[in-house]
Image 1 (cartoon, rainbow, N blue to C red):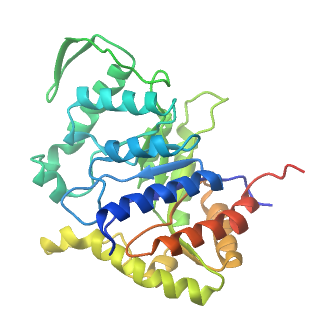
Image 2 (image 1 turned 90 degrees about the vertical axis):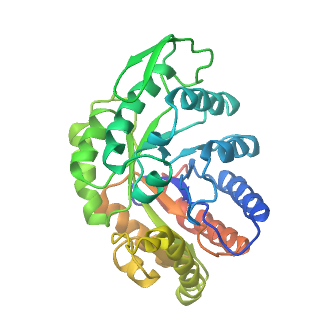
Length: 338
């Protein structure tokens, strides 16, 4: 038995081959299955003007998730804070937490695509400062009003706050992290983190994070690895099904970047390369279980976030992979109740 691991799901909700009404319904059905399978959290991305994100309003999509689930926790990973009015987001976060009975998880970030931000009128070089100031305002507002703030980008003078979250002082915070400095900062602020780095790289983040952790001893923070996943009866079947779906996802990922003659270099351009650099785990249940154990042992993470639906992977294949993972892989990473 290996280290205890908690499981979550990350979803770009990228465009496949099916009509959008069917895509949304299949995603919501998938989320219901994930809850029944014992996953803790469903994280959804926010992207704009690209086939990578068919849920550009994550709060709207997550309101449907709240109604289709009873135990599953959920949230954006991440809200792109420079694109929001902080006051409006305070109210949206509070609504989602109230509608779900306190199951909302608050992922925040500045956005990684300068093109998406530019389309929305946000200068990329100012996005980090906007993000930091917006987060300060949002956390203050979630603690209750009246909201007072005077800053470079946002100003509020005694704004009544009529709606707050169930979880006090605010829902749990999440960030994507790619370097030790960011991990240390998150640890000091008691923010849960997820990374797509290779397992050896994540180990550096884990050490930095817990070396800076200042939270309560009775609170277990999550430090997670995010990977593409596909499970089938055999290794060859899994690769054959996942390979074109991954390529479709990669084309969605790079679509807007290619429009401007650039490519985000930190993403693998093929499934084989993704497996090689620890960005994907694909194979039979035995292979996936062994690979996941290696990833966990090497990185030291306590949270694993799988991308189970991507590209043009069919709903049936996604559900089959999820079911095999839940039945044959997840129990190996949980303490025995016998």
